Length: 474
Image (cartoon, rainbow, N blue to C red):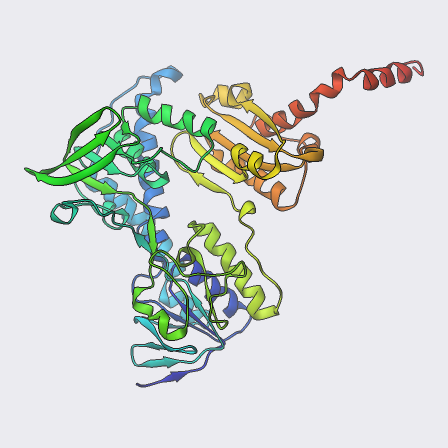
């Protein structure tokens, strides 16, 4: 072995979570070593959030061309140039990449080692010819696509998020296995870009989402042309000429699905196989590294954050984890993950956004709750923009406390921010009722929901009696 390093913090993984830790610690002048074996920026920049949203943006423009007639314009079927589309996706990634680059982090004072890391013991990591003995380690190695155990799958070509965005030409008939957020986002996007799309899901589509909200989205996806088979088991997969054939079993018996290309969207599994966690006394299983609410592992020197810890697998959750760990390491302040304050968004059209408890979760936890609903059709801006498909749904506890908020509709991911702030700060619907919302905006619909919660007061006989008395004074 060569150089021995003794930083305060060793970060393993240069994705969203690891970069947040490294940049935050370096900003305070703390010695940091970052070990990354692959591309800086991790899954989000290279294979996940960024390229998928670039693809979705292109699909949205294609759909807008088809729907132009609704606005008094001449509709047209778009011509999809697969090579130019891929070039645009690459240019978006390249525009963001310098922010996550080795050069930038080196300029911040972070020592970046581009090697594979593995634990030698409970306080030492080897990376190439370096030995790293840090005061604290943070594992932020992200996750990889989970590959389901389906007979014949190993003998057929398939796509995952790690290969989909470099695939040219676009699929003729894309078969998506998995109807979770990523699966449905990609299904709708490819359908809008001219592909025939079939989705197969062994359980219910978007199974973690509110039933009312997801029904709006699933109806839209089906209406646009995606075939969705829920509660369907894939018995086996085989090659079929240049494509694939899936042998399936549904509620009405067996049937086959033929397609040109296969996309696996069946969840994620933590990247930790190369770390030799056992040498460091770190408990884990195949899917994740075990952590407590403070994100510490069974080795008190070591934290695990982001996808590596399982649970909330979002870039913004990874950044949240990084903040919690930094406040513990740098300032010795307590930091405990509070999942109810972390929003999630599914970037279909319409979108679904949720923060806090769904109605079903709230009733299970709190018993009696109230639910306030407000349709987007009640928004003047939604009507002017042709975006009146969807609703806001607020779960309310005692005293008007906001327990959860869900939105299905255009820009749901933007509108959920106010509700996430409210839940994090334990605000009530009264706070939403009293703030001034600009007109005409989609966000007004949240204020309308709050007003509707308090509107029964206008019919309260005691309130009316008080008003009658006050009217006597002129």
